[in-house]
Image 1 (cartoon, rainbow, N blue to C red):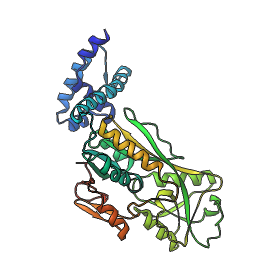
Image 2 (cartoon, rainbow, N blue to C red):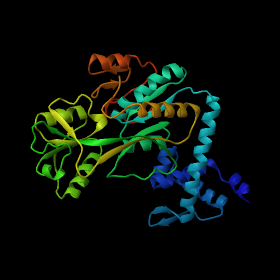
Image 3 (cartoon, helix red, strand yellow):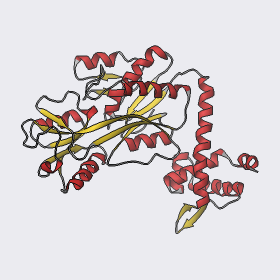
Image 4 (cartoon, rainbow, N blue to C red):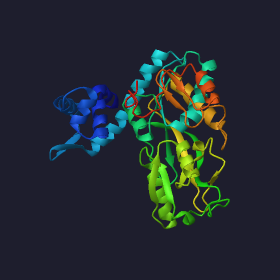
Length: 355
């Protein structure tokens, strides 16, 4: 009976059911798959007949998955990922070769991904890595929509995220999150009492909401509401803002490279904060596994406070080449011929969708 059912279920219709669970409307599923909402509805009706159970129900003008629909959508993740992996595995014929499209945030690219790409140059000469900077939520979406093969994301210890359905997660590194404050600040100590910073202005990242949520939750545990007046995209700029007295900030250890000598970095006394960096994949192939292994080596070889010979924080890479801050960063970037596409300038042409 199980074998008969497996033969009855059409992969295309399973993909539509999975997408309905992800996007919530027939219209959105149609847009993603290049068909009308009416065609989507017809395919799902056919899938219900194939499965022999009710998969969707109408709630007003919208549709919702039934419990059986949710169960089958979960199985669809497994089935479709396995089919995709089989196709890619056959194409690669067991030998790591590119391209592998990686979506990542900037500090992970600097600390982990670029050293991994450099190692691939000698170990896997046919492996080609395509890099695009995306924040974690956008990277996961790109991975689900097959616009990348591997996503590097992060989650703060105070903002835990459940493992995304249908994706394999490999932890890469746990790094401390430190308080940055100017030298001579009256709260300076080996470990900072967050309550002594309750009247300070806080500088937060301007991409996404995680940085705002982190300081808000940490401050709430310390008994105050933070003043988050300033924001910036780049940790190097945030550290300079701290240096010039515009406020204090929470900065992950990997964002502290090149910190000015008159900016002090300290852990919190009663609330140790950390950020978990992880790699996510939909399916495993020789090329993806090779990049994962190299990322693991790079992450394991970087200790707190040591970035190795990689691009300096604040480096800017664009299509067709790399521009780096400082000659050391430039020389490393130019030594990475296997980085075919890097776009770490949000808003640059093509930044919204992966090649």
